[in-house]
Image (cartoon, rainbow, N blue to C red; front, side):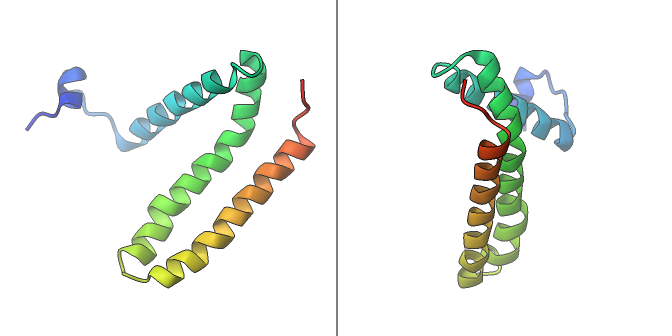
Amino acid sequence: MNTGFDLLLNNIKLPRFWQHVIFWVFVSFFITTLYSFQTNFWVSLRNNLLYMPIQIAYYYAIAYWLVPKYVFEKRYVMFFMMLVPLVFACMFISRTIGILLLRPT
Protein backbone atom coordinates (compact mmCIF):
# COMPACT_ATOMS: atom_id res chain seq x y z
CA MET A 1 0.00 0.00 0.00
CA ASN A 2 1.43 3.36 -1.00
CA THR A 3 1.05 6.22 1.39
CA GLY A 4 0.92 9.81 0.27
CA PHE A 5 4.52 10.27 1.39
CA ASP A 6 5.68 7.32 -0.74
CA LEU A 7 3.92 8.76 -3.77
CA LEU A 8 5.43 12.17 -3.14
CA LEU A 9 8.92 10.68 -3.12
CA ASN A 10 8.14 8.42 -6.10
CA ASN A 11 8.48 5.29 -3.91
CA ILE A 12 12.00 6.19 -2.80
CA LYS A 13 12.73 4.45 0.48
CA LEU A 14 14.89 6.55 2.78
CA PRO A 15 16.79 4.83 5.57
CA ARG A 16 15.46 5.65 9.01
CA PHE A 17 18.60 7.62 9.92
CA TRP A 18 18.10 10.00 6.99
CA GLN A 19 14.42 10.39 7.80
CA HIS A 20 15.43 11.61 11.25
CA VAL A 21 18.11 13.92 9.87
CA ILE A 22 15.68 15.47 7.39
CA PHE A 23 13.06 15.86 10.11
CA TRP A 24 15.48 17.69 12.45
CA VAL A 25 16.77 19.92 9.65
CA PHE A 26 13.20 21.03 8.92
CA VAL A 27 12.43 21.51 12.61
CA SER A 28 15.63 23.49 13.07
CA PHE A 29 14.84 25.71 10.09
CA PHE A 30 11.28 26.28 11.35
CA ILE A 31 12.41 27.20 14.88
CA THR A 32 15.18 29.42 13.53
CA THR A 33 12.73 31.22 11.26
CA LEU A 34 10.20 31.59 14.06
CA TYR A 35 12.70 33.14 16.48
CA SER A 36 14.31 35.30 13.80
CA PHE A 37 11.33 37.66 14.01
CA GLN A 38 12.55 38.72 17.48
CA THR A 39 16.14 39.19 16.31
CA ASN A 40 17.95 38.58 13.04
CA PHE A 41 18.21 35.21 11.30
CA TRP A 42 21.92 34.59 12.05
CA VAL A 43 21.58 35.18 15.79
CA SER A 44 18.56 32.92 15.81
CA LEU A 45 20.45 30.24 13.85
CA ARG A 46 23.42 30.38 16.24
CA ASN A 47 21.16 30.10 19.28
CA ASN A 48 19.21 27.28 17.70
CA LEU A 49 22.38 25.33 16.87
CA LEU A 50 23.42 25.56 20.52
CA TYR A 51 20.03 24.51 21.92
CA MET A 52 19.05 21.92 19.30
CA PRO A 53 21.24 19.06 20.61
CA ILE A 54 19.52 19.35 24.00
CA GLN A 55 16.09 19.28 22.37
CA ILE A 56 17.04 16.29 20.23
CA ALA A 57 18.46 14.37 23.20
CA TYR A 58 15.36 15.22 25.26
CA TYR A 59 13.02 13.96 22.54
CA TYR A 60 14.89 10.71 21.93
CA ALA A 61 15.27 10.02 25.64
CA ILE A 62 11.51 10.20 26.03
CA ALA A 63 10.52 8.52 22.76
CA TYR A 64 13.07 5.72 22.65
CA TRP A 65 13.94 5.14 26.30
CA LEU A 66 11.25 6.24 28.75
CA VAL A 67 8.12 5.42 26.78
CA PRO A 68 9.13 1.91 25.64
CA LYS A 69 10.68 0.96 28.96
CA TYR A 70 8.03 2.34 31.32
CA VAL A 71 4.83 3.35 29.54
CA PHE A 72 4.57 0.29 27.31
CA GLU A 73 5.25 -1.87 30.35
CA LYS A 74 2.53 0.01 32.29
CA ARG A 75 5.02 1.30 34.87
CA TYR A 76 3.57 4.81 34.94
CA VAL A 77 4.87 5.87 38.36
CA MET A 78 8.41 4.95 37.39
CA PHE A 79 7.95 6.80 34.09
CA PHE A 80 7.15 10.02 35.94
CA MET A 81 9.93 9.40 38.44
CA MET A 82 12.38 9.23 35.53
CA LEU A 83 10.74 12.01 33.51
CA VAL A 84 11.01 14.65 36.24
CA PRO A 85 14.83 14.42 36.59
CA LEU A 86 15.16 14.36 32.80
CA VAL A 87 13.13 17.56 32.51
CA PHE A 88 15.16 19.28 35.22
CA ALA A 89 18.47 18.10 33.71
CA CYS A 90 17.49 19.47 30.29
CA MET A 91 16.33 22.73 31.86
CA PHE A 92 19.61 23.05 33.76
CA ILE A 93 21.73 22.34 30.68
CA SER A 94 19.68 24.75 28.55
CA ARG A 95 19.96 27.48 31.15
CA THR A 96 23.71 26.89 31.53
CA ILE A 97 24.16 27.19 27.77
CA GLY A 98 22.12 30.39 27.84
CA ILE A 99 24.24 31.91 30.60
CA LEU A 100 27.70 30.78 29.48
CA LEU A 101 27.56 30.71 25.70
CA LEU A 102 24.93 33.17 24.53
CA ARG A 103 25.14 36.91 24.67
CA PRO A 104 22.15 39.10 24.04
CA THR A 105 22.57 40.96 20.77
